[in-house]
Every structure is written in C-alpha cells, then in structure tokens.
Length: 521
Image (cartoon, rainbow, N blue to C red; front, top):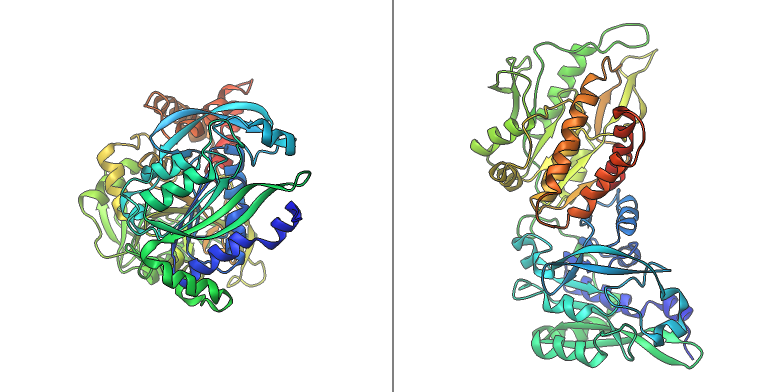
C-alpha cells in the first residue's frame, strides 16, 4: 500500500505538470491555494522559470511566501484573498495545520484520518472571481493553472469565465470521498473540466491516502486543452527529455522579451547634498554626478521634477513650485508620458544604479510594480574609489519600477494623496499601496549583488516622520471606508498595528511600521 510519505516523495503530479509546462513553453502560471508556497518551490526545482502568481487567503502564509520569494523576480504573491465564482467576503475555516484551511468545514471522513485538519479559528477573507484576480491582458496570457483549495476547486473553475483564452494546462486536487462539507466529488470536478471547459485528463495520481484503510481520499488530476492532447501525450511519454529552453523566454507585454527603462525620474536639489566621509571630506558633488551617469546608462530619458533647475547635464527639468508631491509627479508623467517601452524608474536623487540591474530588468514582468530597498554604502577610508557596504535599509524603499499604464491608472483614479513628497517619510509606502489599490501586483525584491546604492548619511530631523505619519494613518483610515477589496485585510492590519500600541504618536508609528514592512514585503 502506498503511504502519504511516498506520495510526498514521488511528486508524481508535480513531475507530470512540470513536464507539460516545459513541453508547451508555458510562461505564466496561476497558483490558487498557494498556502506557504511549497508548490511554487517544487515547480521551480523541476525547471519552470516563468511567472508564478500565487493566491492565498491566509495573511501569515502570504507573508511567508513573500519572504521566501524576495530573490525570485517572477514569483508574484497577490494580496491575501481567495478565488471563487464571484467576488464576495467569506468565512475561512483555519485548520490546525493551516494547509487544510478551507471555506468549507472539514468532513468527518477527513477528521478521522487526519485530525490536524480540524478548525481552530475563523477569519473573514475576501474572495475574488478567478477571472478578476489579475489584469485582463495578464489573465488572457495565463497558460497554466494549479488549484488546491480544499473542496473549493469547482468554484475556482467556475470563476474562470471566458477570460483565460490562453489556458493550456490544469492541475487540481480531486476528492474521491467527501473530505469537506458540501465539496464537489471527483466526478463533479472532472466532468466540469472535461465537458464545460473542453479539457482532457492526462494524469490521475494519489494525493492523500487513509493509511489505516488503504482508501485514497484525494487525487491530483492533470488536464490539457483537448486540441493539445496528442502533443501532451507525447510530452509525458518523453517527460525527461522535455526541453527547458522553451520556458526560459523573457516576458514582454504579450509574452515576448522583457523590457528595460523607458525613463528615470528623480527630483534633484538645487545643489549637491553634503556626503562627508570619516575624514570629513565631502563627496556629495561627485556622488551626485556618479548617480546621474548611472541613470543615463540605463535610459536616454532622465527627468527631474523639482523646484530647482537640473544641476546635472543630460537631465531634463520640469519645474514645480516646491518639493514635488508624489501625486504631482504621477500627474506629470501621465500627462506627458515618456514614451518608448519599459518601466519608468522613480527613485530618490541620491541613488546610484549598479550594473547588476542590467541582468535583472529582462526578468521583470511589465505588468507588475517592482520596488526595492537601498544598500547603504560608505567611502573606504584608505581608498575613496572603493565603496564599502553598510547594510540594506529595510525600513523603506528607494526605487520603484513603474509600468507606464499603472502611472496613468493611479493618476486617473486619484489614489495618491497630495501631502506626500518625494524623499520625505512614508511616501515610499504610499506608492505600492496605491498600485495594489489600482489592481496591479506589487513585488518587493532583493538581489545580490545589490543594484540600488545610497551613500550613508546622518538624518538631521525626524519632524517629517511624525507629521507625515499622521497623514498616512488618516489616509489608511479613509481607504477602509471604501467597498471591500483584496486590500481590505491588509489595510485593516496596518491600522490595527497603530491602534493596538499604547503610548505617544511616535510609539504608535513604530507599531504601524512593524505591520507595514512585512505586509508590503
């Protein structure tokens, strides 16, 4: 008799699914019911290098996935939410083992064989119709789907609608006996995928067995679109020979090559800021010039939106009356788009772009906002040509790779309040939150060697921290008054982090930051 340990070791369904991903050259995989991200890790191990969009309603699991995927530019974890037939708010039954959490109650059959599926708590979770999880152009380009939602699989399938025109491969869990109250049978899900969706089953392997009775309670089914059946059978017959190269393409707007930078946007000061080293030698001017050269090496379009005329050659100037608000920068870019293809990089004026960024840009999905923290550096005391790392600044973000359509969408919807100014506290949290509110995935990444460099310096005042903090809290509270969305749970956690701390405003802001950083990471 097969055991659950053997099932986990053999990974039969994952092996077949990965072979099909490679053989069909899949580049976009929707992972519904991602839990802690084990499936994404396994499928990477089997050679899949395309995009993974992971969907999971449990915030703790989402945070674990985002931490695990910081170095993987093509693994995007969506805001905590479920997927179903229609948009709704539902009660999630949280299981003792967390991986068996479900919108359905566990059946006695399942509890008897695996007691850790018992419900130990509940939480409200937003459920998006599967077709509305991503932007329409991305949804249409999804070519592979994995569903493991503990009895809710049929609802996920019904939520696909006609939007997934490029879907070729499906992997889903199927129950041969009732495992969750009201859940569909193996035959129900199989019939829907075959007769309603036009797919053919090419693999059925054990997923969970009652080791006491030998009854296989759950199976994994792999399906391909019916017109691809002959090719799928050929791929599976020669699965070890399925080429990796097909899945290794870049990712453009339509699945083609990834793009670079259409423009770099900063806000230059009227004069170079002081950046003294340990011997009090000022490297501010030379550092700023090095920053400018690095921007120009990535894009011919470098723009300073500022009250002072550009002090660097080759940088165009758009004048504003005071240190620009982030909203004004987005308005400037939306009203006069830079043109060309690729991201608009919005960054602080003292950020130097390292050469490592050149290798990262082709890996980025043009439908995602990417952002990252800076690496602080200092001048070597003996050789000023040498920069020494001084640690990554994890409390904020200094570089935002903005899809141009996202800039227009944020501007049109007025998602960014006018009080936040570039370079001042909390502005860097506003940008990814606005992107998520606009329906764009947002991905923080870390890379080694680090491509975003900043010369360490002393912060002279904390006044803006508290002043802008009050504005930031008020903005979050206003967002919670909007209709429920996938962002509702995250925003509520942020506010809870502020309200739950006793003490003065600064103490409360520290509590808020302790929620925002892992929430956005």
